[in-house]
Length: 415
Ligand code: ASP
Ligand code: MG
Image 1 (cartoon, rainbow, N blue to C red):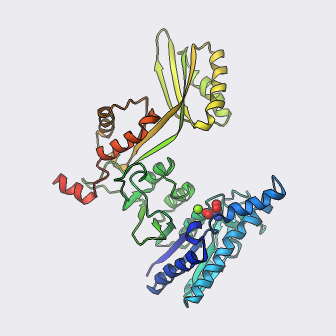
Image 2: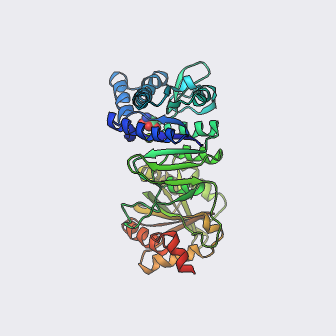
Image 3: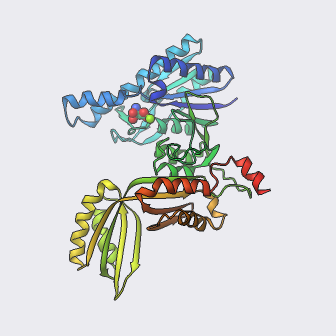
């Protein structure tokens, strides 16, 4: 029988009815003989409500007191879930972070887990009890309550699974898995049976907000098999794993990610001399503005054009900084364009399949989408395009890479 860590997010425990529903699920796993550790979030909206109370008193409460306050949200759900389990005659005990002893550093409101003591949980599991742990929190070495940052219950679940060497960490949420792309953009988007950690990080960082990125990184580092599934519908969800499909029929691409939150800045006619890239991007970095895609063109007469993208919210600040730099470099012009978007094809299969880039560019050319910039990594190719073509581009690529076709059908086609 397996040891499973199950995490239920805020909407999954958002009301007494939903908590009872979670208890049914947990009870059924228990009755199948599995050892179960459950991690819960606060009821949906509760953490925000608590922060609101704090701010009604003080605009900047001390982080220590804020942690004492917001950590209560998760404690409420642990107790209610245990009661619901007891009602079903399932033995269960609740724990807050300090009771488990989830030891963290002392960085209040964004603490990092340093060590987890599994002794108390093991004792309960050995006695046949379900262990219910408050997510998102721990204690520092002096016993102060700490929290892990918004969405931190995912990280708690993965960390407990790693500490207990659990067979699987299941994250129950309001979607039934990870999709080949956003189903709101492409009707034919398909739930993936499996995705690698690397792919998931590329997909997640571009807006498929299923899981806290930090939790995915953590799970990858400690090789914790992670499964995302719906708490409202039955189904296998999506397994996030270290294993790659290496067979000949393994798809080149796992999914299409996109991001509208991009803006483009170009400075024209800067001298083509060593150090220019640094002169342009140095001040941007110092202002804590993250640069995404970069393009440099050789222009005429030892002049060059330099283009880069930033998040839209940073555009105005970045443009002001760039105008100063441009004046210092006697550049001819600065242009800003907030109406761009990034579309990426993501897949570890790219490492062994040639021609992914040309297939991507051909598909976009056929529907008349102009590519403004390109950037590549080992498992991702991204293009910057005009924002108004974003949905067309995503749909086109989704079918060009046959992502709407079930894998079995793809094999049939290859034979
Ligand atoms: N309750 C916390 C939050 O809302 C932690 C979590 O839900 O994961 O951010
Ligand atoms: Mg959450």
